[in-house]
Image 1 (cartoon, rainbow, N blue to C red):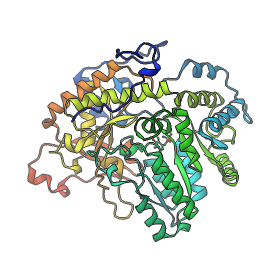
Image 2: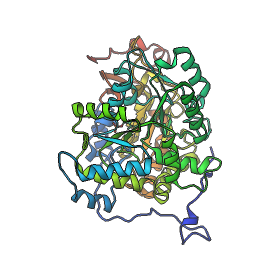
Image 3: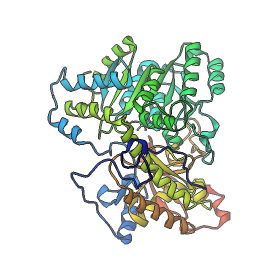
Length: 497
Ligand SMILES: *Cc1c(COP(=O)(O)O)cnc(C)c1O
C-alpha cells in the first residue's frame, strides 16, 4: 500500500519552510529527561511469560518504548507544571475549579462542568441519570468502559456506525460516521422514549482513531431534534477529530482547530471527557452539560461517587493543569505535530507493506493482526500474541484491540468475535521523538518478516469485567491444522466469578 500523503503540511505557519521544503522537527525542546531501560531479548522473554503474555501486566520499568496507550501518558508543558505549584486545594470552591469551568466554557462551549477522576466516572454518572432498564443507546461503535456503564445502568448498546468502520481496508476518510438509516430505523423500531441519548465519540477509538465528519454530525443532530433525543458527546479526542476535519472535509481547510472543536461541541448536549487523552494531563476528566436539571442531578451523584462538585475526583492543582491543557490541545501547531508523528510512523509501515488499518488514525497505528498472522485462528488471540511478540523483539509495548477486548456475549457467554483484530501502537503526546518512531517501525518490520514463528495463545485466567486488562495467557504448542479447527479440545479457561 502507498503511504498516505494527502495531509496538508504546516509549512505555511513556519517561517523556515514557508518557501521551500525542509526537514521537520518537534515543536518543543526537552527540559527534563527520563531515562528508559533497555533489556535483552532473554530478559524480555522472561518478563512477558511472567506477565501471562498480557502487555498490561508488564512492569513499566521493563518497557523500552511504551505505546500501550495515549491515556494519561502525555508530557505536560512548563505552563502546566508551573500551574501545579499554584494549586488551590480548598475543599470547596477551589480557584482551579473556576479556571477549569472557564476553559470548558470557552473552548468547548458547555455551560456546566463536573470534574471527575477520569472519563469512566463521568460515563457512570450520566448513564445512571439518563438510562432506564430496557433502554437502547445507539453509538458510533462501542468503547469498553462506555458500553459497560450503559449496561450496568440497564441499557443495551446498539452499534450504528457505518459499515466501513468495521473494514480495516476501507480508506473512507470518515469512518467514525453514523449510518443515519440504521439510527433512524432503531429509533422507529424501539420508540424514541426507549432511547435516552445517542452517544457520539470523537474520534472513534475502537475503529482505529477514526473521525466523524461535521456533515454527518449535523445530520445526526437533525435526526436527534426530529425525535427529541439528546446527544452525549464522548469528546475524549475531539481536537484530533477536528484535525481530520480540517485536513479532509470540504470547507474547513482554513478554519482553526479551536473553531472546529467548538463547532463539534455546539452540536451536542452533554459531554463526557477523559482528560487523560486530548487534554494533556496525566489524570482527570469531567462531565459537561448545558441542561441545568441534568447538571443538578450530576452534582448530586458526584458527591456519592467522587467528591464535592467543585473538585469531583481531582486535586485542585490537577484541575489547574487541565485548564491549561485544554487550551494547548486546540493549538494548530500542537495538533499538527501530534497527529503528524502518528502519520510518520504509519506511513513507514505502509511503505514496508505491513497490514495496518486505513486510513491511519489520529492517536495510534493499528496493526491488522488478521492479515499479519493469517495462520493464527481468532480463538488463539492473534492480536494478543502479536503484541507479546513485538515486546519480546524490541521492548516496544503495544496492546490488543480484538477478541480479548471484545469480551463475551452477555446472554450466551460465548466470545464476541469482532471483525477487527488489531494491535494498537498508541503514541503518547509530546513524549517521544521521530527517532523513537523509527525504532518502532524497524521492530514491526522484523516481526512481520518472522511472523511464521508466532502460533497464538490460550487464555488461562479470565476476569469477569474488562478482561483485557488482567487476563493471562500461555503460548499454544504448535498444533496440526486439523486440531486447530477444534477449539473444544483446549484446556478449560478458569473464570474469575
Ligand atoms: C479512554 C476513553 C474513555 C474512558 O476514559 P478513562 O479516563 O480511561 O476512564 C472513554 N471513551 C473513550 C473513547 C476513551 O478513549
